[in-house]
Amino acid sequence: MVKLMLDSCVYDVLLEDGPLLNRLHELRRAGVIDPLATQIQREELARTPDVTKRLNLLAIREGLARYVLAAAIVLDETRWDEGRWMTDDGAAEFDAILRTDYRAGRGHTRDAIIIATAKYEGAVFVTAEKNRAAKVARKVGVEVWHLAGLREQSSALAAD
Image (cartoon, rainbow, N blue to C red; front, side, top):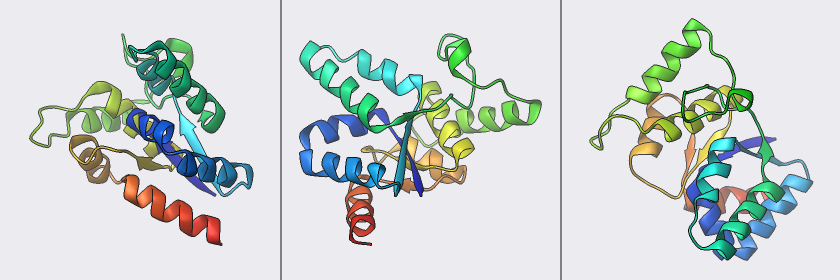
């Protein structure tokens, strides 16, 4: 089973790409993939201004992804009951992710939490973005699939 940590931006694509969303649902039901999400993705999607789109995005997230605790509790970002308390080593590892720099400035906290959770869960980080978050994930040893990779891999998994 392949664990997938879906970045918040992926849900926008799934909203527009019914065949891909259906394939992911089929693969999840068959036990081939295990899509994951934290409260971070839920809260980011809940900030979508258009009410109808927001409800559709949240419905996709709730119907597709299994909820997991965030790998880090960060004041003002993670709810106390929706994250894992870190050991000293875990805190140092999270700090390294947060401070990884790729020309866009220091790491964005929410991206760092999602990437740290992907690493903790042994999941592939799936994103629609090709810049900083994907580069940070790779640098800290997390496999990354962009949308083309998700489409390719999900087709290959469905064919098996």
